[in-house]
Image (tube, rainbow, N blue to C red; front, side):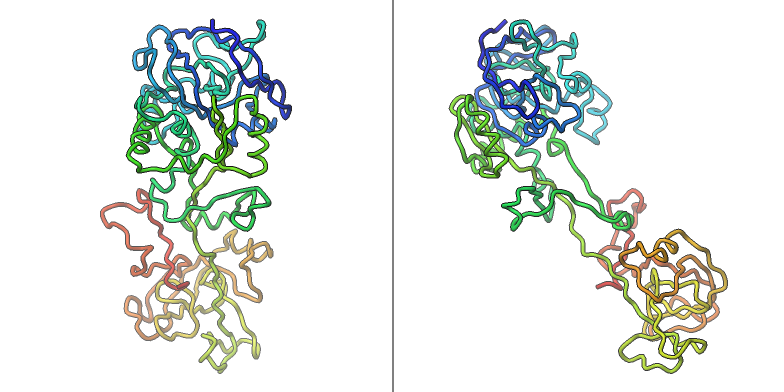
Length: 447
């Protein structure tokens, strides 16, 4: 038992942390006791401390971004030994469970049930106590303590020459910001600090489901997608070779008793990282990456008024229309009208001018999307319009440049165009679209 160790204990949600003398039990089988030398403060610590975390347990010892030296190991531990320089990792890597073997995720399931409950896997108990009262672990790391006990699958051995006061940040924040390393072309930082709204705005992000239907993808990662024990040492090596930045994140120095001030700095948005003399505490903002796309706007008018000038309006002429009435086409189809003008790629058009096709609609089906626009809930809905996008008919006439269909052909108008020319449809022919990361969404008529 290591007794009388200074530790910042969170006794209750949203109450100041208290520096206490904590007893830290020896590591059991498959466990490692680490002397923490430097730690950083992350917004996740503040989230749990706030009481908003549904898995938050109190009293607990927060902290999950740190570096230290192995003090002792339990039975069966072979990959680290006393004296090794290590980074505790909240994201475990057992290399044995189905998730670790899948090659699809870095989320290890071996000890998750224990770490989520604030205890160790071996006996479902905590290794921290104050006068016999158990103190919960946090994220399987609890690094706001001079000593902590972690599972052996949650600790990464690193180069002993690496400065622990710097590379402690590789325990969470820097790997989490791995979008650039993953090749993201654009990174959007989300910050809820009102003083930073001129640089980053919004507490939430949202989109209409239709944006996802068209092939857009939102992806998140835990720990930047890195496998902890295997890849954190590689990140340290990259830092030593000056291939990744770490030092630039550190802006403040504080001591362990000043832990509450570190939380204040985080909430004020006044710093990136703070580091104390014994433990390095840091306030950080987490960066999420999303692919950015322009909003869709289908505004292709056509007229049902015979003889109307089409030079500036791309108008569809139909003799039964009321004089001067302009009707907007929905989904580039307008299949609930008797005749339809559409682009030869399925896009909207007007009269059968260049690359357009006029179709006599014989049969049409009603889809819920028609009802959605008709209801007025569709932000892109325009009225008056002709609904319908699911139909079949016969080509009546074609415009200049149309070669793949001709009058008399039986056709199905498609709201989803396919030009076979735009960058979005230049996909590998030897790979089915459903196995591809590409989209079937053609943008030629929107560019």
